[in-house]
Image (tube, rainbow, N blue to C red; front, side):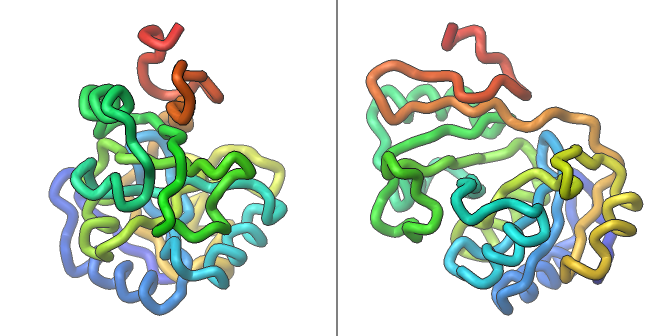
Length: 203
C-alpha cells in the first residue's frame, strides 16, 4: 500500500493525483471523510467494487453510497425534487447520506431494489477534491474490520489493510460517527440511520 499524509484543509495535489491514478487504474483506496475513513473506488469499475465487498467481508447485495464533489451535477446521478434539492443545499456539505431515485448514469450495481442510490457530499476537502479531480463519483463505505468494527487510527488501518488496498490518504485520527442516512425518495423524509449531523428537522 502507498501511504501519504495530507493536510486536511489544503491537501497536497501531488498526493491527490497519485490517488486519482490508482482509481483510474481500477484500484482501491482509503481516504478521510468528515465522519470516518472510507474505502473508495471508481463507481464505474465493477472489479474494484467487488474488491471492496471482499475486503469488508460483505455480500454483493449490500449497497454502498458514493461521493459527489458538489450539488451542481447531482441531477446526473439522481432524480432530485425541488424539496430534496432545497434540503440538500441547506445541509451539504455535511455528514449526511441522502437516498434518492437513481438516474440512468449510475451503474445498476449501485441501485437498491427500489431503484434508489445513496449520495454523499462530505464536509472534507480531501474527499471532495478526489471526486472533483476524478471527474465522477467515488464509492463511500466506512473502513471497518471484517467483524464490522469501525477504525479511526490511520496507522492501525494501514497495518490491517496494507496488503489489501493500493493506496491510503491519511489526515490523522478521526473520531466521527458514520453519516446519518435520510431517504428522500418518497414524499416524506425517512431516517434510515441516525449518525453524524442534526436530524431533528426530520423528526
